[in-house]
Length: 322
View 1 (cartoon, rainbow, N blue to C red):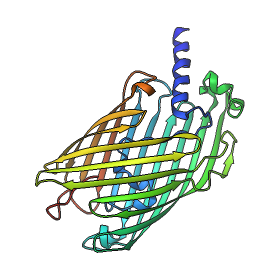
View 2: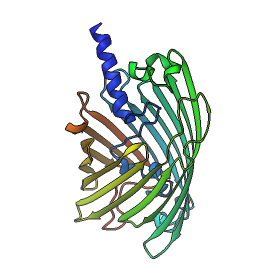
View 3: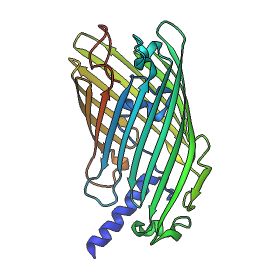
View 4: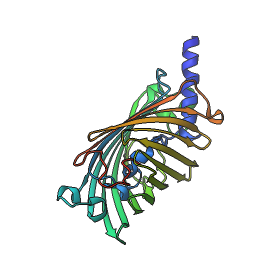
């Protein structure tokens, strides 16, 4: 009996933390190393680092039933690299990506497929204006057998208790970005249509659009040391604004150390390695006192594989990561 009560309490806390008071399967997807996955948040940044295969696994409060788990994999193709352009990041014109995300939290399993396309307009010798668009298809499954007591009393999803239900959403993403080899600033919108194109069971009342501003700067300060700083702000009408940033130091073009903070939510430390065409990263994230609900931290593992080029500088001041 005590274990059952603990599980109910834990499930209730998970639901509150993830859904920000809304029990309608609309959680935010967090990734501490967001600077490695710019193209997912803004289609205009597709192919910014060239042709890549990327992925991450994010595990919150491991060992607790219903705790959030996120899996992501993407493939980006820069057509300039494919055709042999000497500097595709500057001279290439088109890129394409396929992104797959699975987000599990409490009673919900959220699968998303997004196809992005980006085009570039060269503004100056070193600057590009990038425009991007994407189409996303999202399938959300509700396991009514895993609802908490609080969710079971919700008038929208409570009627699905004891059953399996699905809803599917088709929507669109847009974005634009000003990019340079050493810095970028971008603005993007996910779910421009507000989730109004959907079918299946009606346990979601729309899916509000989310606006995202990303910016970053990187610089090689010596032959052996480079730094990179990135920030992101997210706006959505049914959730609090989210502000996060991270900072990395890359040493010998092989190892990086860094830290980051999501204001009012969490801080993290990170470490990563570059070798050949491969980039590996690990984050340990811990909640701030204000958002602390459950014991234990959050683990996040990332991997990125460059398809056409090795992790080596092409010129003396080039920086190999964001």
